Length: 168
Image 1: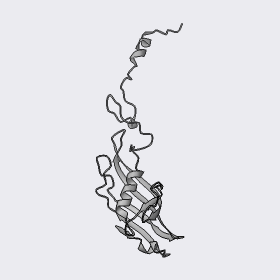
Image 2 (image 1 turned 60 degrees about the vertical axis):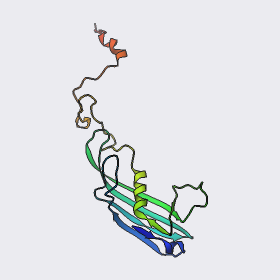
Image 3 (image 1 turned 135 degrees about the vertical axis):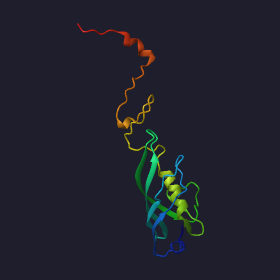
């Protein structure tokens, strides 16, 4: 979806409303495609004091696989994007996180949101913050309870197991 911001760059006081669903069937995270229901983008672009601003909220359902326990899960994500839209940056030392550079006064919303989602998602995706993972010996999901595996003893401390601590 192309947003035409020409009127805003001509210092018009109109507001460009944004309310769309982006499919993103090709979005890949790790080895799978987690955005089955697409992405909801709602917000606006406007000009204030001769500066063009973009304020949008991005929300989506993430269908993924936990990196600790390998169980499938669904998680809702939502985040806000507040940027200043410019046609070019005069100083290459400017903070790129604050600006969006557009060519010909047109913003490719699909590409922009795609990149923002990639930056927003965590490197490690967990089904829940306190995911216990799986047992390294038997493979049981430790979120369902403890396994019956004996814990490995550090070989440097194995001699302590032979000590007899009888209480008299």
